[in-house]
Length: 158
Image 1 (tube, one colour):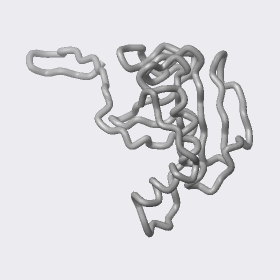
Image 2 (cartoon, helix red, strand yellow; image 1 turned 180 degrees about the horizontal axis):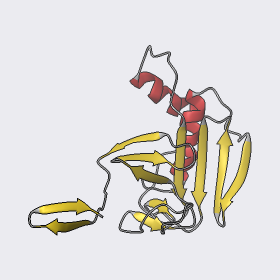
Image 3 (tube, helix red, strand yellow; image 1 turned 120 degrees about the vertical axis):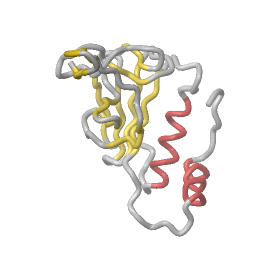
């Protein structure tokens, strides 16, 4: 994670292919989020992951499109299969835009960093990618609910 390892795209891709030798099915879409001030996972790792998963998908390491998501938040897209989102100045955590508005996605905390963009949201104990709504495979995510006692021994969710 830090300082990171630099390998060729083919070397990274070979690790994935070796881990599932013989697999010829469809590969998942990959979304990589990296804070440029992360000291836990070196920012160079975003490029290494990009190299790995573009290689596995048979894509160039040159983005097919780039853009700005919000102030200080850029993305590189690789044929709709791999996306790298870089958040300027963000440390180690998941990007959330705190608040209850339709474009906001939660509460900042120990692992959820206050930024102007949302990386993911949770619903029903599952984590989903903001925008694509794809299940990220993260279960039992932290969830806060408020209860009120309506009669002795009887509680309802607020």
